[in-house]
Image (tube, one colour):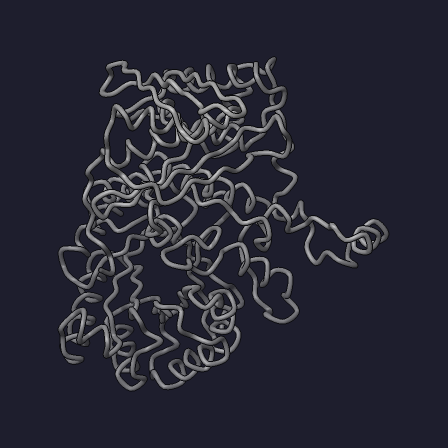
Length: 512
């Protein structure tokens, strides 16, 4: 048994399955670089066969990442596996992750296959994948709800075919920690060649136990890889949270007796980057990365922490990177300092033109805001107008008027396909009026299912970050906008969401 715990991050694949959390290639590259800085062992970059866009993302990440293994998901068929192998060709270290469902419910209702057919398909898939690449992971989808005897046969067969990692997911978040740990241990004891592969756990958070189940799979079951995401991002209630499992294993090494290679000082930066990119705001009381994680409101607690920090703190805030956002740029900072800060944040803009556009926006923001934090810079380069892609809708200017007892009015000037247009409307408030002004011209017919405002840093001078989630014809998208003016940030977020609705990229669902 190794004393090393492998951290497998699937933020860019399973995390992206959250409604509206889809990311552009540039955004995925930025996050992948941050994960590499975090020293994640395996980065699951996407599902190459799902679309041309996903293929290009996996390929670009495989070419850019040198220190982590880059992985692509594939269903258990030759076409998916060949597509994954092609996308991973530039990788210094690549892995194909192939999966098929093994529970009676999934085999009958979803796959419409007999257990024997699933067993044969599993063997053929791993055999074909091993002909493409040395590092092959096999996942038994809905593994925890599978019949033990059958699952043992499948796992034994795929290890025999050359699977180097076997993953037993709790796909629907049904597990209880002790029972899940026992399940993994029983599998390992009953599969004759279990020592020939690394065992992995992949838990969902539907009952709020993804982290506890994953750790039980490691401690009780003997698994040595945990599949997780930054901020616990993922469909439904999310996935196992990377920052929580890492800090649990680091903080309680006396109990787990395991080493992780993660550089925890980059955790908060990764959390902020994922949050600002996807529009999924981190709750203040979230463990490790929430704004309140190291705040002590109680007078008794404050007194204790002032006298001796370990009275109420089991981790130091700086150990997970909370001090990192204190580095400040201002209006006198030059282009080189700005460019250097971008590189330190893992942001690689492709051309000098993009750097100049971002720097111009930085100077404009610095004129309105005396101190610029890392979060401001990430929000600024996430702005649609800095990205290289040609957008259908672009924000130009906004004016609005509101006073007590009067109905607010707004006028928004924006571009549609490069042509300047103007929309005007009244509304229940200045935000409502501004978004209705845009919609009066666009007439998208989209339904707004979420509107959220978050302060990027901690003062009244802070930029406001707005997330708008729109739904139209079954598609769900998130738009994010940031500006010191909340009304402007709202208009930017709405236009960002409309841009995503406008792009019609179709993807094959991995588990649909």
